[in-house]
Amino acid sequence: MKSGRHSTEELSAAFLYVVDREEFGVEDLIDGSGVARATASRYLRAWCRAGLAVVVSKHGNVSRYAVTSFARGLVRARLARRQMLEDRCTAIEDQLWRAMRMMREFSPLDLAACSDKISEDQARGYCQALLEAGYLRIVRKEEPGLRSGFYRLIRNTGPKPPRERRVRAIYDDNMGEFVRVMGEVA
Figure 1 (cartoon, rainbow, N blue to C red):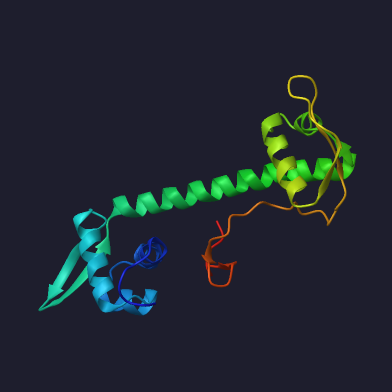
Figure 2 (figure 1 turned 120 degrees about the vertical axis):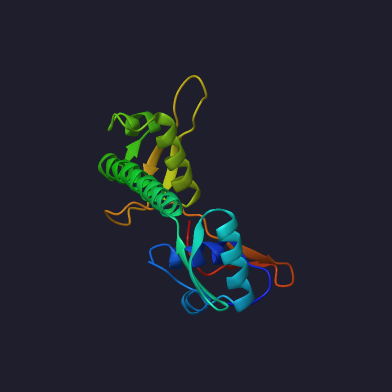
């Protein structure tokens, strides 16, 4: 990674690299996360000030650090929450997609009726996303307050549900296009 200003992703990746290590030093952080020496030192100072890491030994100018149990707990809780949200989204999408494939034509209310855990608003949002992506066609437009929209599945690609993803990108005005930022898809 380049030196200079750090990104939140770089900082997170560096912290995730050391979070489960018993102890580590600047060199470990540089080797494991690819950050520059100055950046690694800056991260370690910030983590110590924030109570996320502590110095466990010092030999001359070389310090060894450990992540605090508090910080480990925060990271584990955040990862568990992310996994829970992904599992929940996947379960909802799985149920909605399965119902769409069976019914072929449906309203969001029909889809919500297939599960006591899915609201009509969640079903409507998923239908809207699939409509915009070309998976559904409107059979009957929604009339707010009177009746729900009615859709037809026109692109059945298989048993796994299509899922909306957020992709980080940079817009290049010179080229007039978006360039995807490599890394994690949120």
